[in-house]
Image (cartoon, rainbow, N blue to C red; front, side, top):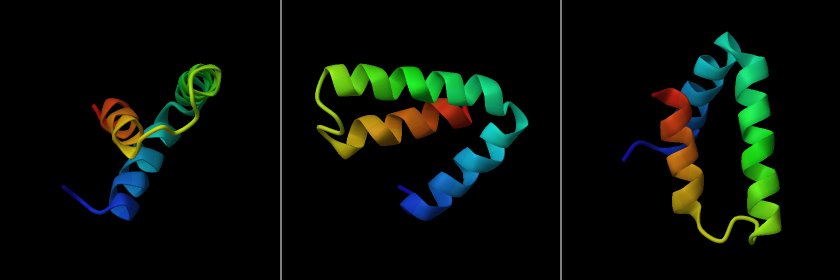
Length: 54
């Protein structure tokens, strides 16, 4: 498992290539989590990062 900082860095590098699409997806994810329970666990956030990188 890589450190969160390097994971976030990779996510930012990848997302900068397609910022609008990533931002739209991230906003939908946050809205969904807010209607659910915001940040109920870190694992779902790490999953989001892996999806963004893939």
